[in-house]
Image 1 (cartoon, rainbow, N blue to C red):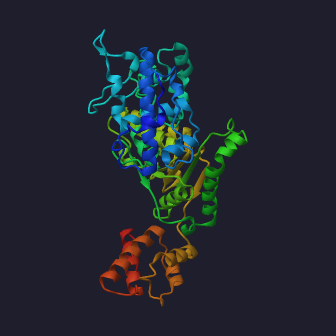
Image 2 (cartoon, helix red, strand yellow; image 1 turned 60 degrees about the horizontal axis):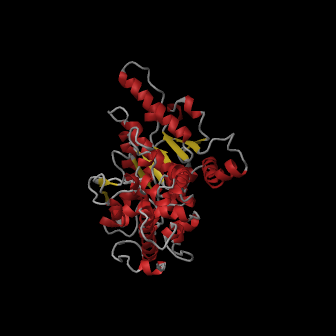
Image 3 (tube, rainbow, N blue to C red; image 1 turned 90 degrees about the vertical axis):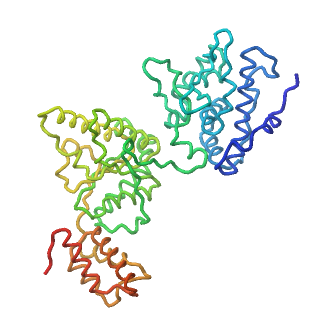
Amino acid sequence: MEKPTFAETTNDTNNNTIKDINSSNAAVLQTELAWLSAVLQTRLELYFEQETPYESIKELTPPNIVDKEGSYANFIQEHKLNFEERLLLILALVPHIKPEVLDILLTKNKDYDRRYSEFGGLLLEGHLGLVPTAETAMFLLAGDDLQKRLQYQPLVTQDFVAIQQGMISISQTKGDSPLLSNIWMIANEYVASILTGIPYQAVYSPDFPAQRIDTKLSWEDLIVSRSTTHSLQEIRDWVKHGQTILESLELGKRLKPGYKSLFYGPPGTGKSMAAAILGKSTNRQVYRIDLSMTVSKYIGETEKNLAKVFDQAQNHDWILFFDEADSLFGKRTQVSSANDRYGNQEIGYLLQRIEDFPGVVILASNLKDNIDNAFTRRFQSMIEFKMPGAEERYQLWKQSFSKKLPLDPTIDLWAIAEKYEVSGGVMINVLRKTTLRALTNHKQVISIKELELAIHEELQKEGILLS
């Protein structure tokens, strides 16, 4: 029987199966899906001892992706995936992009009037196709060859890069189910990034109490004291050189991975902004933990919800930012009730997850003394955000207003900076008020009268009365 060329098999691929993916990725995926279909067909023919031109699935050479563009081809080349790993990757993507490829595995065993257990796979509510399991992956690679199954066992349980990066979860098996019963599928949050190259962004919800924070500002826009700038630079340096220190310099046995920092100081002094700028300058996404949604009235929900945040943060290399951290990480209460006991257990869980987190964690507090001393010893840095001095206030005022609707050039900004001891947060509110009023009243500049009125209004909000 003449062996068909792989190029001929690709012509049967349905060009309408992949939508909303850039053309480069679509072309690569179409050939990859056709290759998987051919391997599946061949595996079944070999398993049932049917006529086939192949003696092994390895005779089906994977499509050539050298010089191919797109995030999927890049992922394969970046991680140097071999024959088996490429099969495992496309198998894990099939339910998301072309589930009918696996319909061939829905064949019933006539002797028992049910599907073949050796094919693996699950039928899930709301999905008409077969969802592969690790058993499906093992059957694809090894068929019923026990020696090969033993050979590939580590690959489908721990060694595959998609498992190590958290893209495929191996902890989905319930109870005492066999190890290979877990679903073999790229997690929903990773699909967009692997198909389009767009970094995954988590969606804020009660089950995921974290929200991404971003900024249009850059490192040069951060106006803080020299000592604060120096301490922030140390975090940037750790992000850049941390792996070198732990691995290349072989200090991983003495130093724990990750970097924990406490930002403390009055409200409006730039703690959140500094965290966002750190993320931007190090090409890391920053997620703020919503502490008001963290402690659940249901025992165990706090741990479960925060576990999702920590796990995804580790997999995606996020920076975690706990705002108003003293509300959860403060001195623990004396145990006088079951609620106190569970509250302290939740705090203990959070402290442990933060200490073990291999990335950057930033905790923000208005007062350093509010943080439990047992935990402050574990910070790599404690960075104070002071109320800006006159020089810093001058620089902040100077860079705040639009060139298209500026302050009246006759205003003595240095005098304003010296006269009013306000934070950067207050200045932002003043900027918003004065710009809106000037625009509403068709003014070309912001007058000293409007500027000082807005400053007075903001100070009154904080209980400061000026004569």
